[in-house]
Length: 108
Image (tube, rainbow, N blue to C red; front, side, top):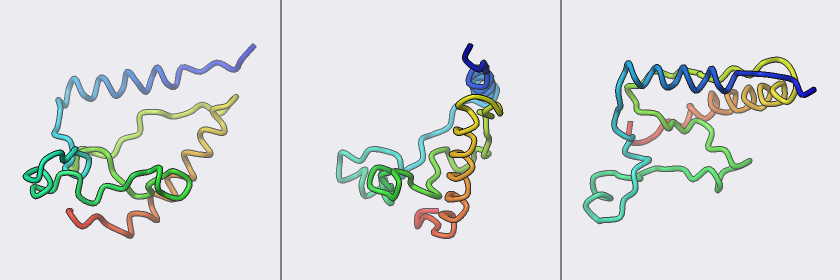
């Protein structure tokens, strides 16, 4: 009786297909762990914003994909069941991301 959706399945397949055709890319420097002084000096982890320390647990404007990788949305929630609320939450976060981009990263 629960509303049905294969949106996650379709998103997973689309993301997997992208990686299979595009290949892998290096992890952005600001997301890399810096356990040594050399890595810190090279910029590993610099300006990383820990989402748990941000308002609402969301680092608005933060980008987690490699700079050269295009922005893509793989998951498109359907307009039924709980996915309606997920779509609303995603729209709110996209709006916050747009506002957060006004505070560009120093390392770009």
